[in-house]
Amino acid sequence: MKKKIIIDTDPAMGTKGGDPEDCFAIMLAMNSPELEILGITTVQGNVPVERGFSNATYLVEQLGKDIPVHTGKPGTYSQDRNEKRKWLGQREEMEQLTPILPVENDKKGAPAFIAETAKENSGDIELVTIGPLTNIAQALDLDPELPTHINKITMMAGASTVQGNVTPAAEFNVWADPESAARVFGSGIPIRMVPLDVCHKTRFGREQLNLIGENEHPFCQFVQKSVDPWLKINPNKEIIDQGLHLYDSLAVALSFMPEIADFKKAYVSIETKGEFTDGQTVSEFNESIMGQIFKPKPNSEVALDLDVEAFNSLFKERVIDFLVEL
Ligand code: BDR
Ligand code: CA
Image (cartoon, rainbow, N blue to C red; front, side, top):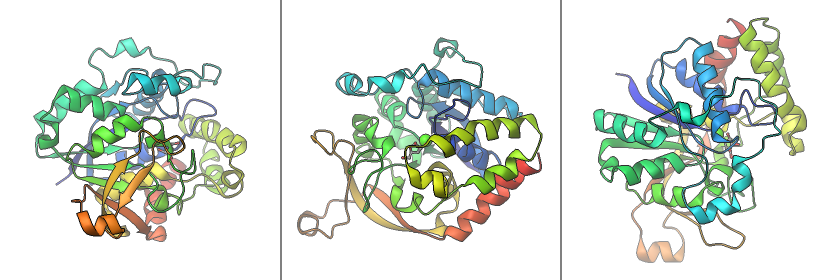
């Protein structure tokens, strides 16, 4: 039986200078017979919401899929945080390749779509989140029963035993909206967390992009155009030399193929008050002194190791080969 999922995402393929990787993850999900995508919801993160909404809609249309797309509102979960993260909703200077759709075009909105779809599919639905957790926190506010409807959230989030990527303490998706992450980790919904610890083992480089770019198909040319600047202008030199990390594709893969990773249970709490550590995913494996004394009940299983070859061959078959043969 297929696993029913909603993908919550901040897709930037279609916005030059944004991380294009979410769209590979969505393509991986679309080409995975193990999954049935009930909807795609977009959130402020890699790009402002209207751009993410436009990019996701374009992707669905270009690949001829009948999948509803709904958008979140601009801003973070808490107004105070919004002040500090205001620039995430701006960045108007970025060149846009896909037609911009106003957020107002979507009457329902992402949180209501998540809450309603979860209720309709109660006990038979999972979320795969590959962006900040704003929409999920807002959906929890709309329906306090949401945790009883959703079996699991597989999320690309956090840095468990390694340093963050936005700050030494925090990974981008959690850092972008820590209060929403705190709400979701405290919700009681079982979490499969896919942190930087394993995401950093994955790569997509120039060689793979060239293979896709050799296909004259307009969609492959679009992929080439969107990804090329990210591989060139990335502030991280390692990305330029060795390729981007397939963070979000790994989360999609582990939503239906967890056997390719090693997981360890942890009680994960989110730092929201730190001067230097906002957005840190503090992972208690009950191995610290306090953990051994208080033994908090785990709220997450955290991926800490990966069969990289198994992931690479899945990604090659379902995303790279798919695009090369389009
Ligand atoms: C996460 O942040 C974004 O840049 C990527 O799309 C991924 O979801 C990695 O920290
Ligand atoms: Ca993302």
